[in-house]
Length: 488
Image (cartoon, rainbow, N blue to C red; front, top):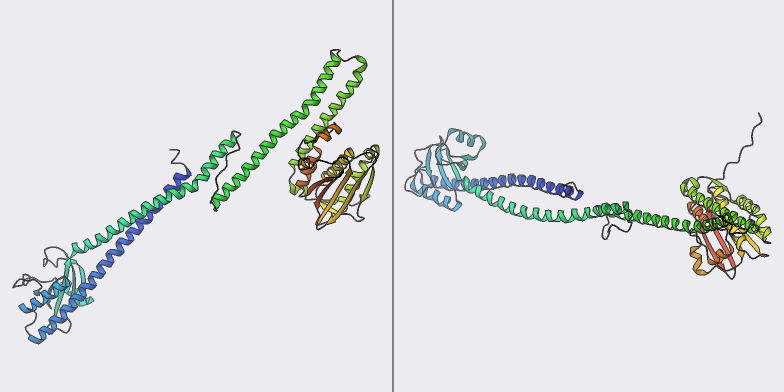
């Protein structure tokens, strides 16, 4: 029952019914047309034979006289009948039979007459055509064509007949040929429909099985799309793209859980161990303050981790259209971010070199999010810069985009680490030793924000100079200036 409800079964049955209905209609039309064709061809042949016989008999009658009743006339009529393959009779103007094409010495139909209605039909239509026994002239119905013999000395008619069953046999032969050909075509059509419909429904079945696997957490199955360029192939391709996205999301989720668990494990173990040591007296009272400071530091680190996770959640909840629907002055954002970092830059004994334009640069996006991008890059540069060196901050526009770069002098990032530094919780061995307060989310958040704004970011690190550069699309329209509050 389930198989009968499947798309494959429904499509196959629809194709089968369509073929059967088509051949039924075609067969009926062919039968009617072929029978009509046979009747028409036979009638024309009989009419031609009747005209030929009438012309010969008329000429003979005019030459020798005596009308159409003589034995010589019957012999001539028999000869024409034998050549044409039809039986013929001749009647007078009243329908009385004068002679026939029988080979006997005398005509066995001489005492019979053709019905007046048939004679009237010939006079009215110049020809009679139909299946009849002529009111007993023939022992069984025959196909009869009647004509008047033109220019005859006396009014006379000739009737040409053929066995109706023989005509049906010819039509039956045609029908048998058609049925055999139709059966072969139908069988081939069924086989073709079976293969084509099965091939069409296979991706749908695969998608159903794959979706069932996805619901159980297995994202490895894919739908085969080789050689399919139709709508089903496009659907299967889109399904595979969706499956890839789901697999990446699941892998990211598992990695996120593993990374969060790893990042939480160390500070929580430290907090728990030192707290238990203070409570059970393992840590002497004079060192309690020192270890409480460690607990406080680890607690703040956990807080930063949670705050970073919340930032990621908020970023992922916003659509690119929502983020890019506004515009702001990127120069103002860069300047404000630099001012907010003044204390940290000063504490590290760093100088700042800026290359900034005099005119505002308006870009599309959310100013708060881009502020976080610039702040994270400046914080990262200040954190890993060698004391006494300079930070270089640049802003410029080029080919419809705005570019911001932040550079610092410090250790060179290994080449193999460069493609990984924007991943969640990725921290190089160098940064783990120098940045115990970091949680490995800063650059990932930067990359996520820029991706959502349609921007790019790349990093270079050579000979101790590390430079982060990101781009944003320029705004099409400047934001409207804020109106000053009106006095009431």
